[in-house]
Length: 143
Image (cartoon, rainbow, N blue to C red):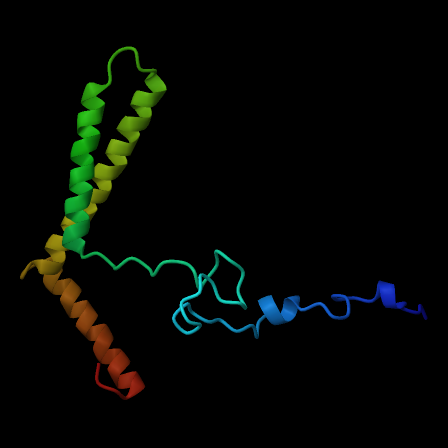
C-alpha cells in the first residue's frame, strides 16, 4: 500500500484560504450591503459585486425600431462603398444586410401576429391560454 506523504497529498496546502474566498460557500455581498466599496471582500475584483446592473429588457416595438434604424444606416453605408473597396468587404456588408432584413421581417411578422385580432394572432393567444389553463389545472393555482 503506497504511503502518502504530506507533500503528495491532494488539495490545497494547509492554511490556504481560497475555498473560503472563492468557493461554494463564499459570501456574495453587493456594494450596497458592504458600504459602497468597489468590490466585495469575498469576491475577486471585476466579478459580481462591481459589475453594473443588467440593462432593462426592451419592448418588441423598440427592438423593431432600433433594428430598422440600423438597417437604414447599413443601407447608407453600402451606398457609399465604391469600386476601390475589396469585394470581401462588400459581400460582408451585404450578408449583414440580408441577415438583418430577415430578422427584421420575422420580428414585424411576430409583432403583427401578437397584436392582430384574426388569424395567427388569435391562434397564438388561444394556444397560450390553453397552455396556461392546463398548467393552472395541474398546479392547482390560478394563472
